[in-house]
Image (tube, rainbow, N blue to C red; front, side, top):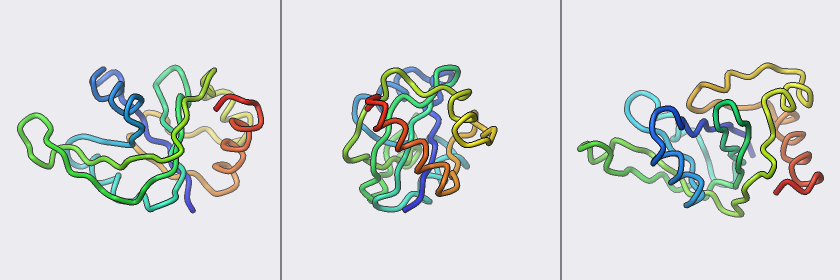
Length: 132
């Protein structure tokens, strides 16, 4: 099992951000960012990150890549459904994540992988603190 942070890219489109949070899915639009979704495998943990807010949700990937219509391109968006999906309240801020892991992550990237110890520490904190 691997851990990923998927930026919801609210600044690029409110509708995409809301769809990810309402439907419990990881997604990315357009080349080359959408291809990063292909890296996620079944049972990987995906944290959804909202810029300037923090981790706002998490779930376990179902492993099925979905190619969707986006702005006229029939495969312009790649998505994956997240099972056991939970909103994180209050969100886990970038500062808290750095404090837990000791690492300053590139949160503005569409999708990036966390090392196993950091991913587990973040997940455990979210559940132990009752945020999910």
